[in-house]
Amino acid sequence: MTSQVQKLQEMMKQLGLAAVVFEPGAAMLSLSGVRWGRSERTFVLVAAQTGEPAFVLPAFEEKRARELIRAADLRMWQEDESPFAAVIDVLRSRGVTSGRVGLEESVRFFIYDGLRRLAPQFEYISAGPQRLGLGPG
Image (tube, rainbow, N blue to C red; front, top):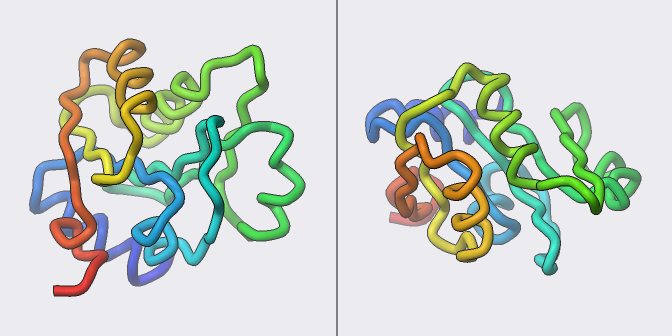
């Protein structure tokens, strides 16, 4: 586990966040070292207070992802499956079944909406990188 992940997990505990969801961008790059372009298909990094973060991505991207993301928990979703169900599966596998889930501030609305509809038991809040200890300042 990287020091950035440990730092994030400590900050999550302080802020009362059970988990945080990131889309590709500066915060994901800072946390994981992974640079990935955004598309209309859901690709996210899910971090909980314990355990390694997991990536949720389209199955057709698996080969490329395995080349770029070594020794990581990769969860693939098929075109006829919900990527949001895969995110919720990651949360459950980390023991997260309720509580506050931070959405890194650049997460697009359709991802928030998909998660909210599938798992309304969570309280979803905006979580900027500075607040999470991932940005300057």
